Length: 80
Image 1 (cartoon, helix red, strand yellow):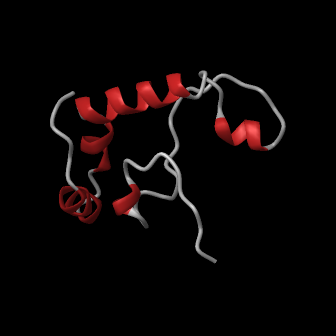
Image 2 (tube, helix red, strand yellow):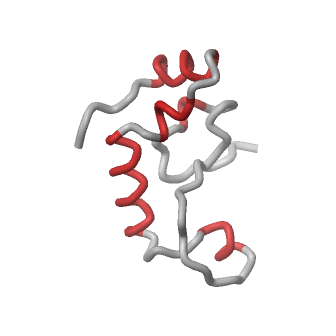
Image 3 (cartoon, helix red, strand yellow):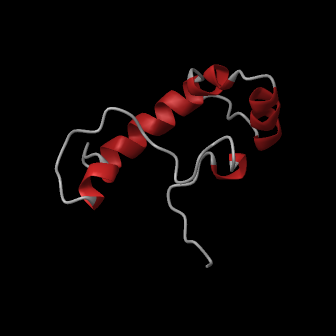
């Protein structure tokens, strides 16, 4: 896998409104493809609603702009 964009770099990209650089990075593209494969190519948002559909993109566990520290997280447990 190629170089992972750091959390600090992601925060800078958010400030200048250039998250496209993150999403087009080789690391993110490889990571998201592997994660979608590990989820049997099923959309997890649809699955939660009882529907079955093929995943086209990988969603973050929390919005990237609000939680850049979770950019590469595979799951999130809310402490509330």
